[in-house]
Amino acid sequence: MKIKLVILFTFLLTISSYAQSSNDALLFSSEELSGTARFVAMGGAFGALGGDISALKVNPAGSSIFLHNFASFSLANEFYNNEVSYRKGISERRKNNFHIPQAGAVFVFNNSNPETTISKFTIGVAYNQKKSLSNRFTASGDNDTSIGDYFTNLANGVPLELLNSNSLQGGYIFLGEGNFNGQGFSNTDLQTAYLGYNAFLFDPASNNDTNAAYTSNVSGNSFFQQYDYRSTGLNGEFSLNGSMQLFDNFYAGLNLNSHFINYERSTVFYEQIGSPSEINEIVFENNLSTIGIGFSFQVGLIAKVNDLIRLGASYESPTWYTIADETNQYLYSYSNDLGGQEVDPFVTNIFPNYRLRTPGKLTGSLGLVFGKTGVLSFDYSYKDYSNIHLSQGYDNNADYSLQNQNFENNLNSASTYRVGGEYRIDKWSLRGGYRYEESPNSNSISELNGYSAGLGYDFGRMRLDFAYDYSSQDYSANLLQTGLQDQAQIELCRSNYILTLAIDM
View 1 (cartoon, one colour):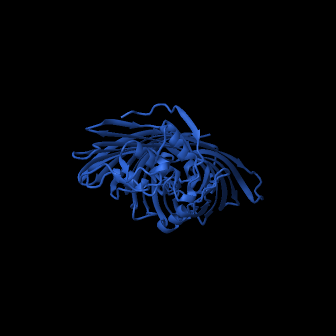
View 2 (cartoon, rainbow, N blue to C red):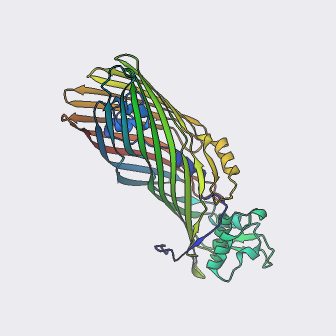
View 3 (spheres, one colour):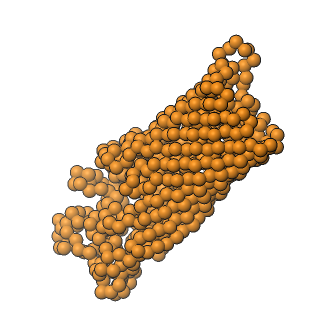
């Protein structure tokens, strides 16, 4: 197979179809447990505690818990393992990812006037990695349905005159630039069918330009299939925090967040077909590149009921993203009689920008502070994923009503429960945590269970913390949208090791 290293031609295609799947919108709307080692070790249950840079992303009021200027920087190494089951075939893929989960600082300004309402205010800046978008798995097994049906299904109903062209590249560009919505055709589906036609995966029932019926050149009832999925990137945010302490017992805060998405995904589907089929091998490659920027805000309150009990509440607004997608495709077929047929238009589809609105989140928290001995904390969060919404960008006239209806019908609200504790022995701190996240769609993804532990040592004005976090979750993946109904069943196990240097300035 020819690996596409360089795109020779780039064209602006006014394509009105939806490049992202529902799974991608859900991917950008979720987040992982990530942050300082102390935060992760305690399961992220910091909504009523504050006093940690990563606690600000749960409740922005937490910065006014700091007594002095404070900064922290973290390094992490994430390991994930995918165990994949597809058509009775089982495979396993491991990967590690080194990254910076957080960095930030809080500056404390105390008011020396004992009669004032605002006894302290703080300003904070922080970077947080919300979610790693890196993943990799391989699904392989024997199937009784061929990928050839996928291409044939896309072609059926399409007039032959749209698939005939003297130039592979010219025809591909024409199908991308044209307006076929009135005929009920998606530009991307037409381009994919066009690749299949040029790879001789199907033939027209007749050579008349108005012909719209096609028959597959792939025959048989046993097909070995292998699907390789690989993605890289991250979803991160930069936050500007402001918080104040009111009298002795109340804290209020605000975050203004700037978000970014940098995501690349590549999938390669390989199929081997035995004789007497006219086509004996098929390789289908799809690549997606996504960048996005967004904005959100958070408000939060913490109340110190007494020396033991603290209560917290926070609201995180939806994130409003502007997203741009680029895609390219490649198809290869092989026949024992005719040899190989490489179909590569060398075209990158650049889609008009569109907007994605992720759901907001509500969090309630309870913290117990046992003097200098330790703390115990509990957080509950609620997020309604059916509120995910797509809309037009400034140069995008696409209609996303079907996608939005799909979100409303298939995604649910989900709750997250987090509990964490810390016990101090002299200069050492021992920590542990647990979290449970409900599924936003039980048909495609399971609930998540996560466990964490860690320890820290206080050198005085500097603290070094370490944490280990483990989580597991099952999900299913569609290999193709039509033609193949089987899904790969995947168990994802994620381990994360975090080291944080914290400095009391």
